[in-house]
Image 1 (tube, rainbow, N blue to C red):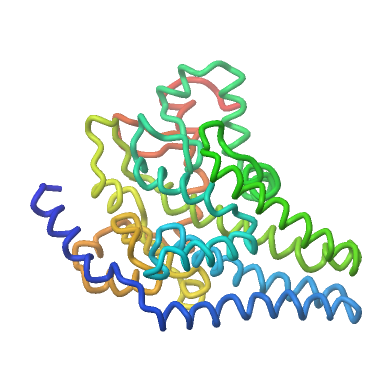
Image 2 (cartoon, rainbow, N blue to C red):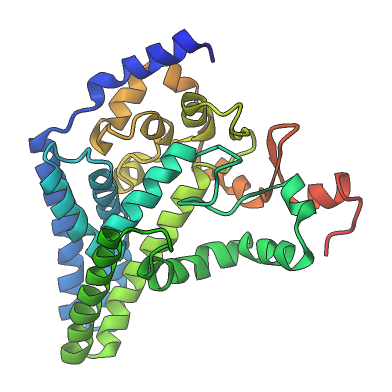
Length: 337
């Protein structure tokens, strides 16, 4: 992508980098209110039938994903014009989704600044190894990586680890403000959920909140994974890395049915978001539709996205993801274990 074209593309999406107070308020009401209603109704319904509570929890999980997108926009400072209101709503939605605001905002901004950069990966992203890195790793690391990339571990154990372990602790280089914010989130979670268990019982808590958090977390990990893991995704060493190319070629357009697109807060237009994180989620589709070059981004559907589960290693030379089977057949000349 030539320099002038990249500058023109950045300029083309500038008009969408604006938050609209009315649209943001509407989104709060059509997202957070239904989510909280699912939780409250699920708690009352438990006395009638735990199955009703579980069903309401499943529905609530989709609104939790949409709530996370509001949290996500607050982290980018794009949901409101006012920083304080972004911080306040970000902390509240962070509590609802079990994501500490300051911690995730910093790590996610690092992800945006380094996405597709082979020399700077490792913060705010999914563990991905190149063929060279995998071959240079010891057997223990190779085994750990193979376990990590297993779909059951990534999408079943992953949400549990993310919500209960990873999100509860800061990195060593975190500043004091971030650490305090994380611990305040942890205290709030223990106090509120502890009170719910104490007054309503663990059975009700399990029927309502476990489906919400687990399914919501699983959907969130899937969306993040699928939008950076496709066959010809963009990865380059730091000397060759380019922000615009990483955004447009390293993030996919996940074309979803309209209902799922709405429930996932338009984050399927991930290439637009990575090109300009300041665009609020409710303008991502418009930016995509009205900016022709963005329509050439890699498009994946529900059906084709399932293929990405197979991709495990990145081939720097051919610029493609490959499966472990392909690696052992064509690169290592070894039989798959």
